Image (tube, rainbow, N blue to C red):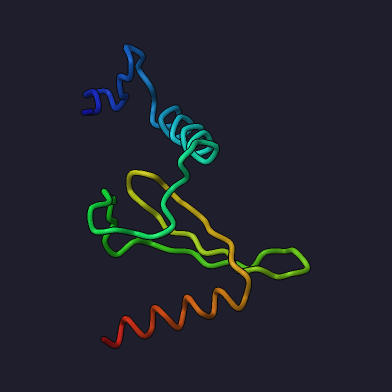
Length: 103
C-alpha cells in the first residue's frame, strides 16, 4: 500500500485519513486478540517482525494501588504502544536490557 499524494490511504476503495487508519489498526488489534490461534508466545527466526530502530519510549507509574509500571514504545507505523508490568517484572526487564547492553 502506498499513501495518496494528499496524505490519505485508499483501502478497499475508501480513502482514510491518518486518524482513521490509526482507529482501524486499533480495531484490528482488538479483533486479533480474540482470534485463534493466539499470537505466538515466543519469537522465532521465521516470524515476520517490524523493527523500529532507536524507538522513543516513555515510562510512567500507574495510579493503581499496585503501582504498576507502564512502558511505552513509539513505532513510526503503529504509533505508541504501552505495556503495564508489575514492579518486579519491570525490574527484571530493566536488568535484562542492561545485561544485553553490556554484551
